[in-house]
Image 1 (cartoon, rainbow over the protein chains, first blue to last red):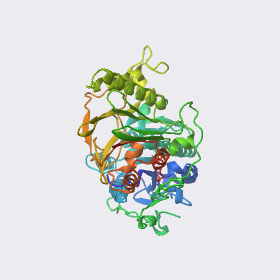
Image 2: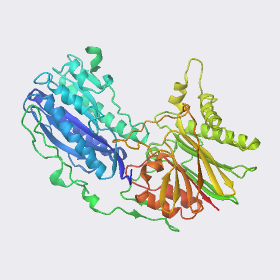
Image 3: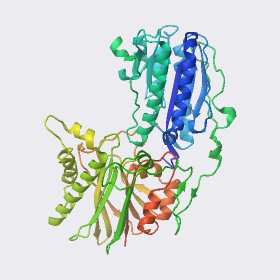
Length: 225
Length: 327
């Protein structure tokens, strides 16, 4: 590789904005604001992350795009709306990620495999229509920057579906039944923040592992299926 | 100053309205405003200039915290000349470890073998994900150099498998952190893993001849008239995305294959950890330019270490470089 301007880890938060998330939006937006604040206190880690937020319902809105969180004053808010289309969500990633990886490489950055943090509280519309799209998205032979996906399900999310969304079994988590959903969202955001910092640091450590500890109040999806 | 123009800051608006998501249009990120500025090297090396040498965008400035580990100085440097060569070595703690008060996990050793006049060297990069990488790097380096020294005492042919094996055994048999009953080599790897490039540079009637072996992702180059010729396969060559995965000691490679290369009369042999190799890339950028300028002739020891400790955004790993000039 020619002159390398830096090593970057693209991170995408792919969050469910369907109407059923209405009561959770405040917790989710507060959690992302806390993540931002935590990254501002870790400028060396923040330097190595480019952060995107995608909200999905029946369609997808890219609310933050490849942001250097050191230079952001405030993160945009997610907004509850519409239904839950996993196919729209994964199609958007499949369309966006290769463009982003190419863009960063054109800017002479070396790019680590992108990381996606997926949060949903519902079952996907249209059953299994999302699966072939997800398969393309995560196919490292076909898709430039095919991401690692950490999937967290809350509320009505189906553990076996969440397990299928995650790119490996230990990346799939579901909130324990009966736990307050707002609290689950907050704990997801706490784990997300820790993961972003740990994953950014691990790039320095030569391992470039995507690290995510089970959020408090969650179970491994594989143990629930 | 924001890197991203305000009007494109992540608010492109809805892109599709179908549940297949097929109407989503990819958004091409705006080119950061600072990318229009031609990158340059600032605070270039010159007598009396001790501010960090800045390549393109500077790294976040950190105050180095003391390391909790004893006997692991922030930076070491060494250098001397023999009738046949001049050598400089520096190993500097990266900003990430300085910021967290962790020890330097890179290490390097150089020595000259009296009977043969050969330069012996070892460059090591302890794997940061393991807790005692700094211990492993030093132990493996000492063992590799001792094996080379011992071999050359008796003959001119080096058993490179034995040199690498000695470094691996130094980890497995470490008096404090080596393998204990019920453990496997993997357990030691999880404590002490390190990469290594070990080798020797021999004077011959035709000039210097370098022989190197490596385990892991450290690198070596010939710097010749401003161009960098990699002596080992480039890290992640041909991969769309980069990975930090590495196969370190005490894991032994299936085959230990040394490379042998003459050092051109006007060239410089470089051996470095990825703290140097990653920002260097193929050497055609600013970091390559910096070292091509600094290493035209052997710089003073502290000037060499100062250059190794250059500042560039996102590059905060430990850095180690050994440079060898023929005389």
